[in-house]
Length: 128
Image (cartoon, rainbow, N blue to C red):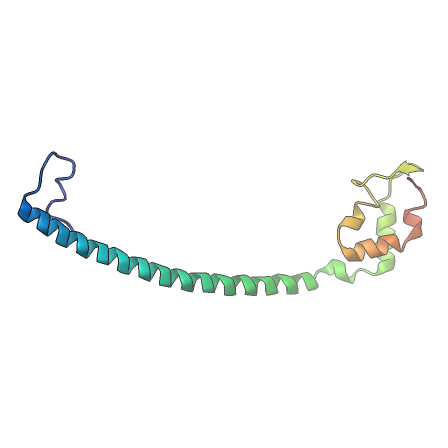
């Protein structure tokens, strides 16, 4: 709703007593409209928040199931051990470094860590 006085705020115009009464009435209507819109926005936001929560929950389930289908989960332990051995430093009695194999490999996931610790050959050439 456009006020008949919309062009007056940027001037030195002083409203008459009659216009002040009209402005108060218009302000009351405008504030009511703002309140109604605020309520509607809050209601719609609650719906959006609920939909986002459902979306996030479903997406988490999708990710969980996609993770279960990862091909790396089907690698035999013996093959994983051979891969880990190939990742070892080439020099004998290398100093242990958390940024290199074997320690780095153990930080990938708990399964790799279990395989790593169960493979003594990975630790025999490392100097502590």
